[in-house]
Length: 461
Image (tube, rainbow, N blue to C red; front, top):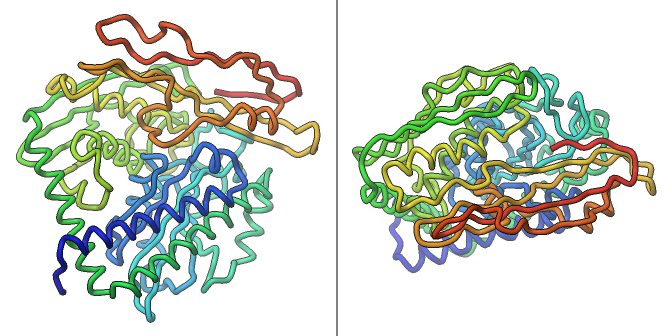
């Protein structure tokens, strides 16, 4: 393999990131569902032919980490040797997909002159896929109550849609127009990425791109390992409790031990509760993605991410526990990962308090309304991830209201969209004065919403 100079590596890196960002723009412009085009509840990643992450676009941070886990499971299931140019595979099996069933992952191979040169992956939240309840499932007790399952199913073959799979989705969704619209938006974004990736190979040549990717990943690993070496060495544990699982009223123990030693950063959830009846169990891929958010933030937060940045990270959780759900455990409510991010920081703060802020609002206080729209007569389910205050840092105030740390680039749903598409009327939306707590540096303030329901329906949060 030929070597390349640093300038060429950076040019290739920029082209790859630009391709991911163009995929993002295509998805936002063409999606039907506000949770995608307004909230940005998606993750977009580009991989080389060895399934190593080479570029990603801004999106939900835990989705981006989950993509790395799920695409390996998906390609293993379908078999890389069976994939052809133009194929697109759909997967939402939670234990492989690293998320709940409504976070639909589409991935596709990219071929140059008949040879695989990479993969594209887009994960986005669909609003309905045949779960026992419309909207959000808060009290499921096994996976089969949470929607139709696709373990790795070709939804496009050689560039042509698979009508029997699309019809299966149509007849198992309460909102088929929205869901199929978002499906095709994801496919459009994949096709955009495919064109751009082939243009990059055409401009620089396969050997140069491969050499640049190798240098990018080596550099990412070196920088992350150097950052780990600068951290205080030691092992620190923390615990916290989930209030309940949506089925019983029992609090649920979460434990985490973070160890920094010998060039490794290990996050171990040993001692946490066994899997519980309700849907707060976390697939292991989602647990890994949560740990990656914390690791990246404390090691190389200002760099474009690639596979090398996580080479020094180990994540552990015993199968059958809260942080490693196995079939048929319910997994629909993913907020466990939100609180787990705070738990990792709580452990780390014992050894490096000067590097970490105080706890944030500690949750994503989202809400959803489900009902029949008075103008169209169509069922709707529209959600919103609301903002919280972030904890103060040792040298500055916390920000807020803002989406939780684990949401990064995600946004809330504008009031104008919520009022137009649901039966909600917002009488007040304002920051809660002085709600962040007193101190030399105060925490970020929270948010208050006063909502009046003007049409029949149901809501949850």
